[in-house]
Image (tube, rainbow, N blue to C red):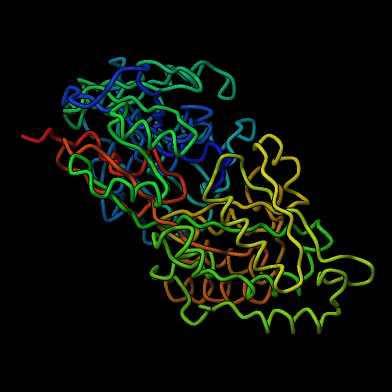
Length: 526
């Protein structure tokens, strides 16, 4: 997860649609060509962008000033064009598209944009993603159709932050952003309207006939909230669902089903083990280094992900242009053992090491019901034991995990596409240690902090590349996380529509990402 809690991260992204399954006994096979029912694993806490919903774009209820295409290139959305950027990189000017209305018929103006950003930047608003907009000094309206952002320092990837959805000031301004009705009854400019939300069951959306981009051909979307992977697969097979997010091993069971199509999206989404600074064992640098070389990442890809993923040697995937070549590493148990020997961790009872009376033992938590994370956790524990480190795997709900994650390790998921600043700063910067799900490990490394600050504040590409190279090499010396795999996202969908594509996806998926990221552009097959 990136910033919001992992159990709802899939929701924070886009099509918040988790709409529940069809009623028992009903079937979507042969359903109307203008409706779709999709099974997802979780639902969002809120539908308000003021609290983080849809922050990375692709929301079906809202639009940002900009959006991303299938290749993640920025394109105009509510803005007429890409921003006009001043020579010093401190001013970004956007001109709004003509004639855009919110779904209640009120016109979009620059005041709505200013209100959205000012509210998120207000410390009273419970938005854990606020640091992502930390470069903003001021947002002001210049007439009804022009918005000017002034930055505190040149921030090279700022335009990508303006995919953030815009909310109507005339509705939300009179409400408490943390508790107001807008959180569950949103009004936006997007291609879909929220028709109903049965918490824990489903969200249903209907097409916005006045959408500025043209009325969608898919008129009704239901996202069914089905936590169990096997149940989603069963319901898809029975015809209760048109599509579903599935782990690779279950998606593979549909490969011979000619009526369904599988979509495999590459991602920035990685699975990692947090190594908390406040735990006596996991804060020891030798333990961290030993775990880093003890794990068999390729085996996890082959056996757990059925090949649908890649080894993770850090937070950036190996094919990302910002990835530092040469940090790839294979399992090396002999090196892990030498590291521990040199640091004074000596083998004891049952082969588990100890130092100064402290056993090399810690607990690893993973969210209940997540089979992929469970399998990663068990494989990690098995590899660690070969080096003499005891890892006790335990499942729990996020309500139980959250207060324990300052001292217990967690099998977590993170990853943001686009610029490296988007995901790395919130994952690693010491200023965000313990800030909700930001920097869950409470990692604190001056070299990494300096690299993150340089990467965020410089507009020179070579300077930024050198900073992120420095960061990735430092993570080898002092790994606050054990990075395991980058996982592909796999979707299975009835083959009844045209125009479906995938993007390279962030951690959050299921709503915003997947083949339905561009749902408004789908066309029924002739």
